[in-house]
Amino acid sequence: MESNGQNTPVTQRVNDLISQAPVAISFLKGPDLVVESANPHILELWGCPGSVVGMPLSLALPCADKLPFVKLVQDVYENGHIHYGYETKVLLKRNERNNLFYFDFVYKPVKDACNTIIGVMVVATEVTKQVVARQLLEDAEERLRLAIEATGIGNWDLDLADNDLINSPRLAVIFGLDPEDKINEKQLREIIHPEDRHIALKAFKKAIKTGVYLYEARIVWADGSIHWIRTSGKVIYDDQHKPLRMLGTTNDITERRHDEIMKNDFIAMASHELKTPLTSLKAYTQILAAKAKKIDDQFFIGALEKCEKQINKMTRLIYGFLDMSKIESGKMQFNPQSFDINALITEVVADNLSMDEGHNLIFTGGEAIYINADKDKIIQVLNNLISNAVKYSTKGSTVTINSFIKGKNLKVSVKDQGIGLKLKDQQTIFQRFYRVDNESTRGSSGFGIGLYLSAEIIKLHHGKIGVESQEGKGSEFYFLLPLHVQ
Image 1: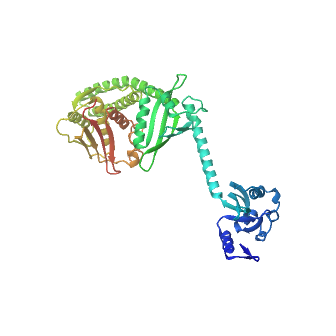
Image 2: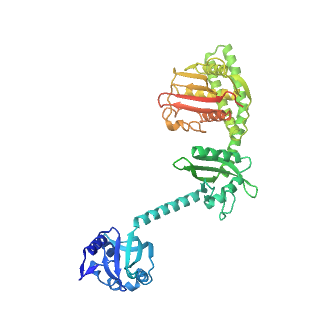
Image 3: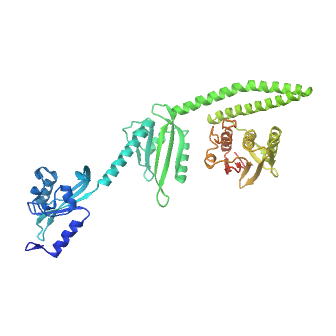
């Protein structure tokens, strides 16, 4: 490779390649490990000037005998083993500052045609960015893990191919198990209360199709105590939409379920106690109104009519709270019967017209459509939808009620010319206690349970409720009921 101390063209090209390489490279020759070639990157690592080329490594580097990597290079030369170093820390001075950097190293013996070791090739690749990025990710994951553990939530990762489960210790604790034990999906499923297993199974099947996993159920610990859990997750699919994994969290909601029961019991008790005085108040108001009409006292007649309207409003509110507590405790009773929905809507519209003379209520129903449902509950839904349409529409505007057969379902809609709904409100309007918050509604009364009750009633009839709306251009609330409800 060399001739008369001069570099041959081949040697020169090799040296040029080494010099311009984007990684740190050096060739150390002979038993003294003479620095035959070294590019600027390796010199920076060593903290040496270019003048060290041609010098033995022991003389080129200060305190070489105390540097671990020098001993490793000597071992590679003497024994012919390749040595790899990963993410080795190196303190370098760059931009007038000392900083810690990371490098991957390879020390490889170089042999001649006779398979004799003639030197060692040193190659170092900087991996500082990768290491720092990984450390930041690990730190973020650790902070997230600590945050999740602080909330008492258990997280898990389920391989859908072999049902292999990776879980946090908190998940085991939630299910009444030892956090140190290895648990599996089948084991957790068997802890779910026997009466609630169908809930979890239904949610799992739905998640495979929709990608969203969500359910609440009871679990039974080994000591026989009953607890409530809420599980939510997301399915990960491959390019062919084949489900691969499910990631999710589970938290113990036992204390919240107890709170819900206590709250529902209180609401039911308070509402029940209010029914009796309101009934008496309404009866006395009607008696006084009848006497006022006999003496033709228009002031008292008008005042008592207003009182009766407010009593009716309070009565509907109380019965709404009672129904809500019954629904949430699973005690809502249904009395299905066959009836003509169009005849029922006609009666409901007439009743609402008698109470509200400021809006035009139009029903465009046709011939009789018979359904099997709880008549009183459907009346409640119709009244809620119509009263909402009236409440959020200007006086003199029209509210249109339609009913028709759509496929195997009955569809009933209530369309107004009111303020309309934003998209975000359309997605949450049927939630319990939800009220639209804008300038047009802040003066309106109500607790936000009418639409929630309507949605629950329709759901219990195996139907569907929804809304189509555009802000400023009115809303159309509708519900679908199977024509043969069981």
